[in-house]
Length: 426
Image (tube, rainbow, N blue to C red; front, top):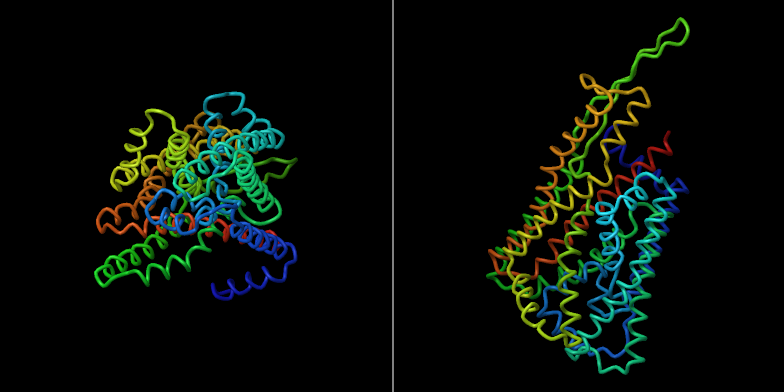
């Protein structure tokens, strides 16, 4: 069967198989609800002041990625899934600090993972409230939100914290009843929804002098998409053999297979984690400055200068992406567990002793494969910052980061749909 015939056969199966179709329809319905919530604003907004504020503040454009454009409208879901992502980072870091948390996540099976997710949800609540207080205080001090009474302020904080928890719940439902990672899909939906407005704004505001720069960035974007697709599909195959099994007078020849090690084992998660960690100090400083904490203005100015310096910002962003790639890979892929499972099933790597030597061999392969994948992911993430530093055009910054997240999430979604199709075919 030709590749084109295979494509149309799988496309037909997507629409004819009720289970796959229902999962995709559930995701589509969740997208519709999410976009509706993103258009419902909180009360007391000065829209003219809001437009001026966003046009002069690059940081909140990055933050809008996690809210799917909801922050730009100051909707009830203005915080997006940011608090939940921050809570997930805290819990992932806790697996390194606490052996009990690590055992809960890796050794207690499904019950332990359920507790782990429940703790992440619990941490999300105070984080959403704190972020809501910080942002509302900042926006009120800038005159974007009219002066609120304590009761009205508390109601607004409750609304946006509840909106963030609602998106977290929707993301988990999409993961369970849909296809793909629900939180990543919510971010993806927000990015895609903002593309038409971003493209039209770029076209109508571009001058003749900007055309070569935009054309160059467009070519870079196409090259980045192609490179992300190729590297995402790349893998290092470790050959696996099975020992011969003797049953009575008959001897069964051991089968041979392979263990795939992907270059981008962690997917888009390192980018989301790194971006969240870069945004966290700005959010904290903004809240402290808004409530009038003494001596914070110097720190705010220093961090603002750092975020506005594309070279320093891109260097830190690159390092964080590489670190989180290794960190998340070490959590999700454990050579000890893989080696133990191979030994229990009677499998081995040719030329490598089972047990500790197999564990060390797999660990070395994963470390070597992860390095080029992490460097590639970090390089692609900072390309928009480098282009901004060279051309001075800031409008492409959010688009570049969003493009990387969107392509990676879309590839993961396609891969999981293909897995569902393969399952139905068998």
